[in-house]
Image (cartoon, rainbow, N blue to C red):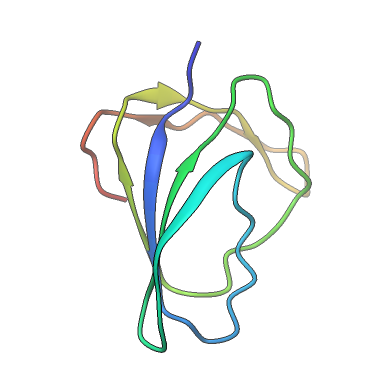
Length: 84
């Protein structure tokens, strides 16, 4: 199973975004940062929080399992070209 490729847009206000294994910053200036990111299947990442506004555009559909700090499981699903 392949997880979705995403394009991330975020305001640059001290952004400390975690990017997945295969990523490339396309634009990075005082107003915006645009990165193309690929999440690898079965790749576990440490818990983190998005502190800034962002837009994610999923280039492929896919599923992910998110586990919150209190142990709640959230299984989001994205469709290709969905904006979140």
